[in-house]
Length: 73
Image (cartoon, rainbow, N blue to C red):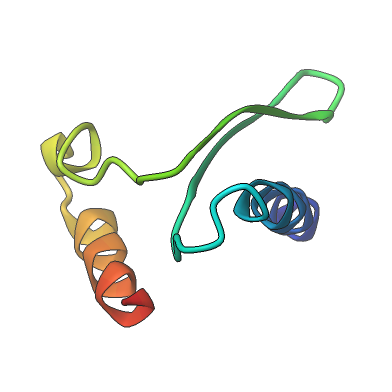
């Protein structure tokens, strides 16, 4: 399932990045239904790192996202 999610995210970003060629990072909001179908809710042109991720009790994921953002720039 991880491979399918990665493929969907990459394909979505490849399509959206054509409209925003100068941007280097995107956020893909996805879900999986009870029949294991992948749904893309939206593709954001700026990931929200200060919002929900910053409020998690375990900040491991938040730090990982921040580190990856620095690498992308």
